[in-house]
Amino acid sequence: MKTDTHHTDGPDPAARLRPRVLLLATTLLGLAACDFQEAWSEPSSDTASTPVHVDSIFPIEEEIRRFRDGTEQVESLSGGEASKEALVERLIHALEVEDVETITSLAMTRNEFAWLYYPHTMYTARPYELSPALVWYHQQNRSSRGLTRLLDRYAGETLYYAGFNCPDEGEAFGEGHIWHGCSVLGSLPTGEEVEERIFGSILEWGGRYKLVSFSNEF
Image 1 (cartoon, rainbow, N blue to C red):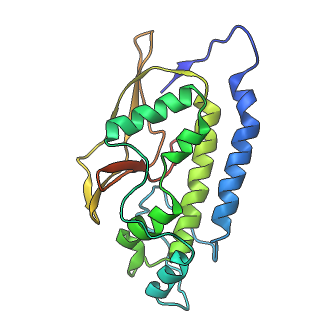
Image 2: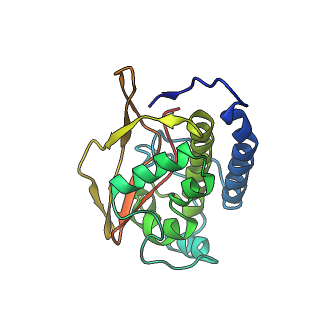
Image 3: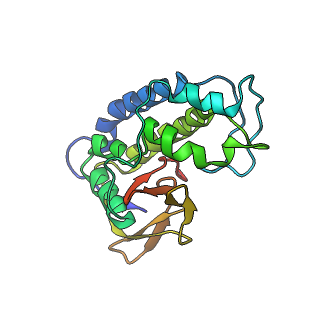
């Protein structure tokens, strides 16, 4: 989705934002690194079709218990929005006004990952078995890079939002649903139609919707 990049006065909004973007990305990556235990090859999407198996000295149940230690048990998503449409619209508006706090609040938290998301992924069983610490670290690493690029590209710009598209009806995921590969549509004043994937999957749980990550195509 392209933006109106013709500025005639004042400093470049992207240049103003870069110090905050760098600090935010560094903070997110630092928090994720606290959970890092071993290196593994990077998959191409949030769900990772062919991850590399890494043996652990602990059974997966113990890995989950250890990862959840210090987290707060949750039964539903907090914040977010009541529909996919509202979630994407809020993200677009927050980008236009450079509201980084709101943008980051739209993504799944560590508590939500530990208690809602991870237990229903392929990583809990062989041959894809990976500890939640590894999956969380890698997901946050990818998400922080995507968020940095998203903010650097679009924060403070006029976005010609025209809706979004998800390629499927979503699939059952635990007590909720998940949608992969959603893209945002734009309709420029020139009449050009554009479509870009600016975030990762969308997760619904308990009637609330949040982003799994900010992994994108940039």
